Length: 348
Ligand code: FPP
Ligand code: MG
Image (cartoon, rainbow, N blue to C red; front, side, top):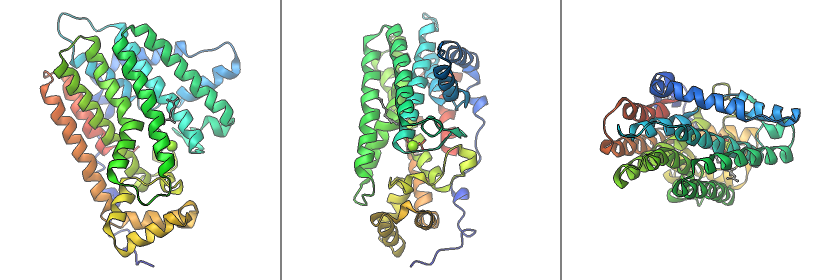
């Protein structure tokens, strides 16, 4: 068995800079638009059946950071020229992006048998899997109605592709469970599918509605893709070093479920005693137990894997920053850039 370094010696929290930025300041330029998005969710997600109404409110009552709608609104403004107004269609685009995200989390919690989301019991835990699957479907249906209202076939195609990507990402992840043969390209591909694809759609669809030139549309798509990858890598890092009460969901659940993400992959790459032990814990499925997952987490936390994962997230943040260079300067573009730093430093 490997001797672990004292955890006070290598504090993972220190490696992942915790100078978290203030999200409300970053999204200030679209504060009013976000209120309209919130109002839409409150007034349209209703049902005369009290049980369905309660389910709908459970999903949105818990809040959420609303990063995806903020990206849609900021990039829509950043790509508007003086001849076009910001319109209701941009709001609907932000709403539909949040609906798809919320729906996919309801389904994800079924797949992961998760009991906590946004600090609340999940729909599958409070009721059951069947209710949760149908609840997710109901939200996807609402998203389709929004998509129809946008009346742009290119945007319909983009979001149709996203739905396929989300499913493909989850299937890839399922097929890779407990596999220590997983490679970094596999991991990145899965992360693009399950997370970055929706960020990319949200970041460039506004520019399509604004009839932007192809170069700006591509730049914003690239920005969204890199922001999404950065987001997912930090999510995977927080699963190893984060605190359940801050995150509103159970930390350590990736490894317990046999899902190997960047921190575990970096340690496995080392071919050290610690990496051999991690491999053993995963292959034997001992990581599914309390003791096994704690040991695996300690091995990772006390290795270079935390720092390397943090550096990987920074690499994608920098690529995102570069993508923004071709977008005209504005306070909206500044906020898109600041969001990259927020995502890098977030603790939940
Ligand atoms: C969270 O992953 C999950 C996602 C980002 C996407 C989930 C997508 C699906 C379940 C497919 C959706 C279905 C349709 C019909 C499009 P995570 O488990 O790593 O994050 P967590 O820790 O927040 O749970
Ligand atoms: Mg999950």
